[in-house]
Length: 105
Image (cartoon, rainbow, N blue to C red; front, side):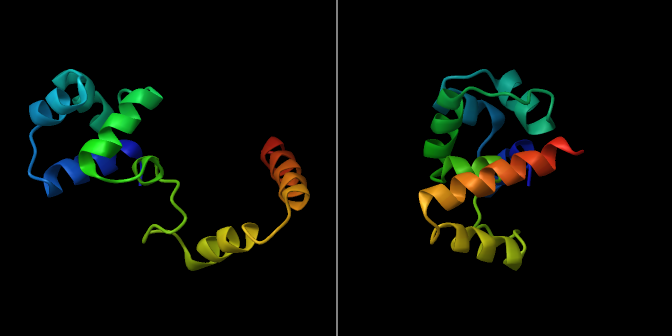
């Protein structure tokens, strides 16, 4: 789930208005709206931390990079779990391989 959709979901789940969220994190209502709509796609880390704190979630949950999140495919969660058992050198080697795969696109 993308950041905007996750923000909107959390805001509605917590019964908060755009203005309440904006006030709580020191942002403008328009900026929160733009984030939810995907019109602003590069929030600062400071804002992400404030949003995560306000909604009581991790930053990884906000940006959709939590491998334990419910919407992830089970094989992706298992792969992440396996990565944690590897040595640092093995993980570095895998990162190089991933970068090579990505550059082929």
